[in-house]
Length: 75
Image (cartoon, rainbow, N blue to C red; front, side, top):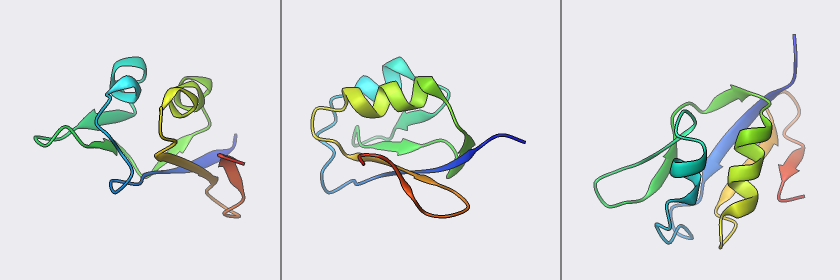
């Protein structure tokens, strides 16, 4: 079994740019207010999700190791 990540979006920081939902539509969705949220709280580690987090202009996406809580992004 591979690494599992816990993904969160800080909705107080999210500016609704939508890069995450357009680059990783299986992992992120925009709600009616255009605020991002993860489709699932825990996912398999994914380069696509990491790249989406890295493209967020305000670093609103937080990724942690699901088992330990260690930060993946931002580190």
